Image (cartoon, rainbow, N blue to C red; front, side, top):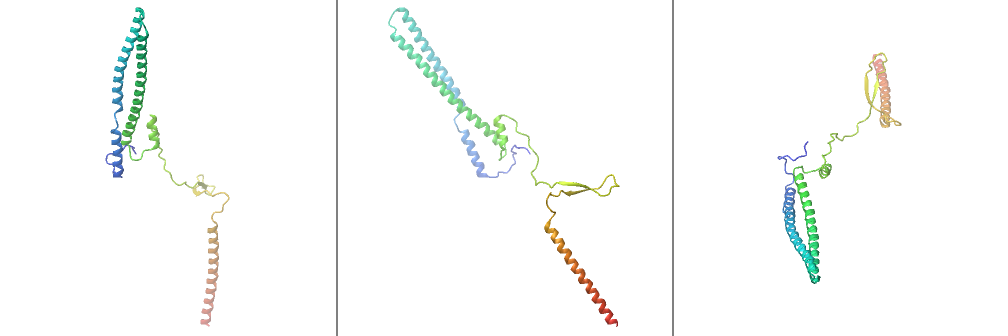
Length: 218
């Protein structure tokens, strides 16, 4: 049986289906983190390029003022400030892009699992879900049906030794250390006793009938 949901499957629970649809809409209404990450990367790339140009100009001005023999305190402060600003903005950019990347990965994974679950039946096997998350094919299905344990059988040959192919009789294997059935044995003893009493009764009844016939004949 295929695990994919067929189009003509009946809706078992309308409320639960509506609830499922609400969950799907909630997932689809989340912000598009992938687009946000792309836009943030473009914006931060432009900002970092501008910061780098400013820092490079400040360092070049520091070297130029050094050759002119003027005071280097102000150019040094400017260069140090631009380098510090470049470092802080770079760290913020990396942190922001990392956070957006994590959110984008979670969102993408959730949508992939959602789309996969919508193609399946209402009950999803645990091994199928784990196999999908691990990127492996699902395990093979075992078609063995659970049933009550069958009694062991023993093969008995016929007592005749002349036949080369003795007739085979299948009988349940006796359980070691136990009698066949004590209640059945007691019932058989009682039945045999009743039959014996009935035979004696009919014997005396027939004997008395014979005596009566002889009495009437005489």
